Length: 324
Image (cartoon, rainbow, N blue to C red; front, side):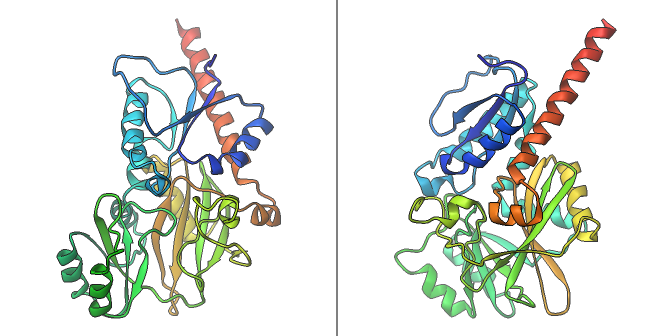
């Protein structure tokens, strides 16, 4: 039976749960699991007490859960409508499932982004490509796992790609075309943030492709082939980026004002030192080997954030009761 200190985990992919559950156990937090795929919601029904954690991935459709993202959107509206606290709630999730909206928000905070155009339809994608100079990439607007990311040298290459029988425009048919930023070195940087805290930054090698999920489960494709096809190895390294970096501070301001409680935000640096941010991952995962190297357990920090939230809500409740 749940109470006000219960952590309700809203999830779709069981393979990503183990590190989170270990973190919650270390903090002495009880939890309930809620698999969001098929279900029902009644508007007047009161949700169970406790705090809720959104762990829905935009790539859920690749694991046979096509309905999960839309069901999560409605679930978050129901929970928040009844006053429940959700870690990475509806505002964060709206960004999670739209890379186009991420671009708009990043620009709002003065953060440099690659030129980005959203398209629906093959002809529209090709028309947009003709307006780009130089190399460009495509990606699914609702992504995750690097879905739909392809690099092209010409419109002719893209045309052959979209006319191939295995072309995939994503679960909603929304494709982005984006300016390709050539990295000064063959890596991108991912900045991990929880609450108002910078955890660490890591470099992800891009020489093997764009599927750069850092989760431990992603590094064991034979054991979890439906998670993501990355092969680990030396793909991830610690970045020298620090908390006082101006870009990190911009990310933290964005999170504070846009409803993001935790995120992994990615950028690439070109040969001139310009840094372009292109992705905000709300359902972030952590690489344990890298965490041990920097002395930070990402999921334990998430659990500690939840502990702080519970203490804060308990103190607020006590103050309200004392005022009555």
